[in-house]
Each structure stands twice: as structure tokens, then as C-alpha cells.
Image (spheres, each protein chain N blue to C red):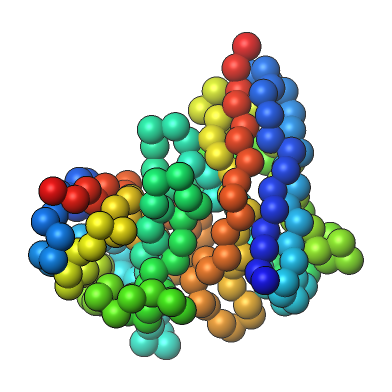
Length: 122
Length: 112
């Protein structure tokens, strides 16, 4: 069964840091790009970042998190990460780990985790 | 960056009736391979989002055939031929032609 399981969310003060993790199972992790997408309270979905299947290509980020968030992966552990630094109140959201495309093949963002909640508040 | 705009932002539909959601892009999403780089997603209450339509018109696995996607270039439409109670939630289009990927604002579908 295809599965993505996020962890690492929590309550953090403005300016603080968190590291989100995503454990993948049920598919060949190292042939897929991976993404993070977030849903802030009262807002719509926002794509945050993506990383290539082996991390060798340029990572992409939404402008609002550039320089503060870093996406990475460990294919040996079938894991995806998102390091969140200099957190702001507007970063409060549910963060979803999402399976992205394969090289040359787009089948949509077709597998989503259940999400992990980040709350930035003093 | 590409801006994606959905309309309407909310929709109230009687079961059995059709529904349509529009998605417009600030740039053409038609790639040189003939595919439109736009997808449709649905987030039902209390659930994670899931994929409905990819590359403009291809239904994802398990998606009922009452859902269809159409359009090309900058104008796209998601149609539900006969709305059912289980279709409630927020629908999003998303462009993936170029990073950063961007979602529309979302369209909330409720049942009358």
C-alpha cells in the first residue's frame, strides 16, 4: 500500500525552527520527485517546495519561504525532510508530504500524506 | 510567476445536477508536447487532498467518470455531470508548467 507519513510538527515560537520528516513506503521512493504542500487555516493549498528524485537538481521553493526552508531527502531511508527556520506566524499550516513526478512522466501529485501541523505562536 | 484564478469561489448544487468550475492562468499552460500542465484536486472535509484530473483532462485512477477536465492554453474547466453528496469539499486547480507551482484559490462545493 502506498503511504506517506509525516512527523515533526508542533508549536514553535516566532523565529524558531522545526524539522519535518516524511516516511515513504509501498513504492520505489528513489525514482520520484517529492514535494511539500501546505494548507494554512482559512486559506487554500500552497505548494511549498520540491526536490528531484536523487536531489541532484536545483530545488524549488515558493517565494515566501526561500532562504528560510530547505527540502532534502535520504533515499536509503525512504525519507523526505523539510527544515523550517526563522518561522513566522503565517507559516502556521498543515504540511503535506506529496509524491511528485517521475523523470519524463507526470501523473499528478498522486499520493498525499495525512499532514503534520505546524503552529507558530508566542 | 504564473497566477491561477478559479471561479466561482463557492458553489451550491442540487444532487443530480451538473456543476462546473473555471480555472484561468496568467500564462498558457500548453507545453510543446501538446499537453496542458494543469491538474485538479479535491479536498474533502477532514481528509487530505487527492488528485482528480491531471494534464488537463486525464482522470486519475479510481475517479468516477462523472468528473471531466477540459480546456487548453489559459482557460480550463472541471465539470461534474451529476453531483453527488460525496462530492462536497474544496476543489483546486494547479499549474505545474513552471516552478513555483501554483494552486487556484479553491472552490467550495456544497450540496443544496
